[in-house]
Length: 527
Image 1 (cartoon, rainbow, N blue to C red):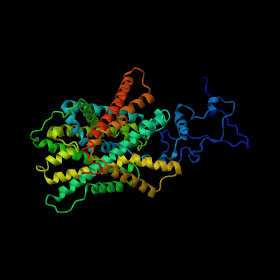
Image 2 (cartoon, helix red, strand yellow):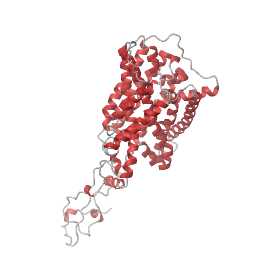
Image 3 (spheres, rainbow, N blue to C red):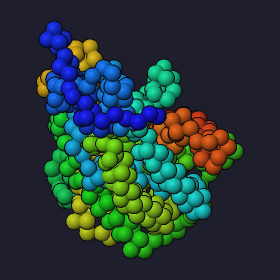
Image 4 (cartoon, rainbow, N blue to C red):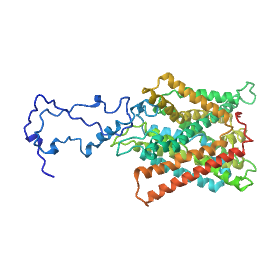
């Protein structure tokens, strides 16, 4: 290139009076953007700041480089990214997930821990009754490592470094990779089913445990008439609806912290008390299998579905990361991964002792309906203090209420987005109350209809498995484009295909188990 002429060495030539000088556009801060970081659309005229450059300009015979605006360089790429973002939806800031962006690594750890541990861990010993010691531990270890790898992929894919776009919802990143129609077919149903199914299971756990808590506190000699199971479900649903009025995902960080603490506490208490006591007489660790080959196959697959159900929560990872600020110097993936690692370290320290210790203490006598919780109350009530039994019940109820909020948030976001897209304005407070109450009591109706968690755990795990274990691998291949036939290429293709095959198999097994046990279940009669 030729030698650049110093602009300061050339005297300024005033423009004619009839030609008004056009102030250059100053570049905004280099920042990754979602469709909107505030309640105003991006790059509106209010955001255009006049330059402080003197009015004297360089003569037209100067080199073209001098006349070129300084921001049209590799350093100025963020403004080109922001210009592309004007085509995105500025109404994103009206929705609960992306309404607030002041999160941090602590908030991420609280949300990940609250969504990643809870009642689903109590059902893991049920899977061990079918898989046995060796295959149970192997399946649990492989599933934990697999889902931790795909969680890392999602954290890295949250923000696109080329366009500056942040994918704040799981369905958004699927639409960007597979197209809008395929994303709805492949992702919408599992994501919504996972959120709704988890909230239904939480209502079942919360309602039934509320009944146990009342009976424990009241004592055996209590003459007070207790509520019916349906009424206990209604009490829990009403408390969940009341707590769901917190506006956005960041506002429930304290709720997630309480839910995380209570989950760690009751998981630790239950496995420690179970292991500390003597094992039940006559227990067996031999896997329980059906008489037919088909029955045995589907029972094994259903047990694997229960293990997969224990690691649901990836449908919330992008949403949690969306609550954090991000820039090129300080991308959100750094604090998000730091918080996720801390959370899943605690999760591993709770889940593995709970599954192994629970199966060691109760063996094949663990009830399929309720898992370790039912076994704990059935076999340890006589030799455990009333205070411990009541404390465990109270901790489970509080955790269920807290987890309900974070799993319901994507549904609140979806319901409100229908209104904002049509009306082009945020939801009023009274409409938000109605929508969340409608969801909460709709979940209550489904909780009353479903007979038990054990009957649907494998099915929910099979449906949610692609969201957790398969789709992130395919999205990494699409967005990062690893070298063909490299280790990452083989790894992601292999895990993605195996995940899809497992998902179809587990869903078939879940439907088969429900169909075979349909005569034993009492629909619309919760216990």
